[in-house]
Length: 165
Length: 426
Image 1 (cartoon, rainbow over the protein chains, first blue to last red):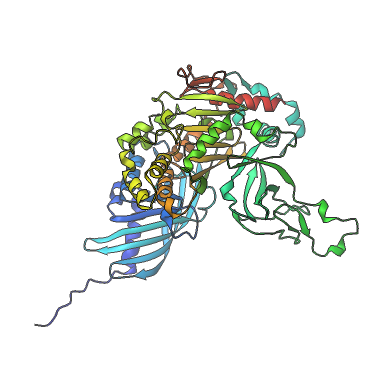
Image 2: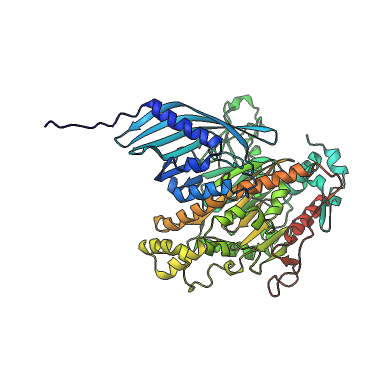
């Protein structure tokens, strides 16, 4: 009997971008409970306040969320009792300029550009960011293992943000 | 634009009487100019914590009112606050947020300044006649004084000494700094954000416990039961106390006034893991207890008129941008020391992120509330802003002779506005 290697089909850039776009769509639609399901259990969602920081655990961040914090954050945003989120600014976002920066058997790292336009109180604001994704390749599909959103102005004054980046 | 005549003629002080203010205090651009002149150019304005200038030739940039400044420590260790403006043709001499350098060179014509502000050298000196003396052109230097590691500056040569200005607030600054857990306090990082509203809306908020359970319901809901009880700010017999000169303290959690008291008390469950981590770093039992008790900060907000607060576990700094724009910085602080206090500082950082900052569980709702004040005050010209809330402080709390009220009272706002009125009438 000859050895049979069952090869998992390679994840293509098209698969990855479709995953990221689906995430972006969930966020713009405030479908936060579905968004939580995109994450692997040990995933980290980070928005730094300084550029070039690698040790986020020891730095002050805009947010540094493990699974527990993500769940609490989603609960807060959907509760109806947070005046900055009930309702939040409307958002329309695009993610593009994808670059694959690393790949292993179990994950792919991507770098991308994200532009969010938010609107509230007759005011538009633009939030541009570099986003670094680590997307885990698991038996039940792609999962977010890490997402670091570095706003273009993260080290300068921001504003109250009542939705997810 | 600034108009001297308008500033001089208007009876600004009359906009606050007793326990109510005219809504114009948030809206009038001419009043804003007058405030910058009569308050921010006259009194002590916080610019830095000593740990932000960690050695010789270190600096950070900042603002005193609307004036950009450089805050430097020279090679001898002296602190200077200098206008960030070349004496030649006004270009800013530094645009970095912080760093270490022994000279500041104006990028336009190359005038170079020492960290103490002295003009070191002018390129092509031959183009000035023999009467030109560089000693006549240092960077403009403000008066600088410090208390409890906090560095303040003023344009006013006649302002009273800083310690006199702080007065009864000093006791509370000393108590606040106990959250260094015996290691001293250092800055760990910061959040900053702007909101479309007047600076005094934020000044009021730091002494406003009344809003806490309402605006911050979602923060409270995210806490475990034990912590939620700690943050029951209206239900623990706290108080607000006028400390003079516009300063006030709001005590929300009386059991956390003195972080060096009650060290024998059992360590709360939620800090059990942290206590174990700190013990593993080699700290003795008493040090572990001191660090754990200090990790969540103090139980009070100390509002220092006009621009800084020692707020539970961080410094809240406000910077007026224009009459309807204010910038807030939340400076996270922790224990000074090395990796052996790392677990405590990481815990402090995570606690800071939980509430503070542009996506914290607290700040965005505060910012929204302040913007709503600025939006609402467009209506109802002549209708007052009420800061008349309060019943007497619980027995035996505030110092005799100080104006005080219950924790939800607006005593701190009245204290700030009385100082505001005094300065606007001077």
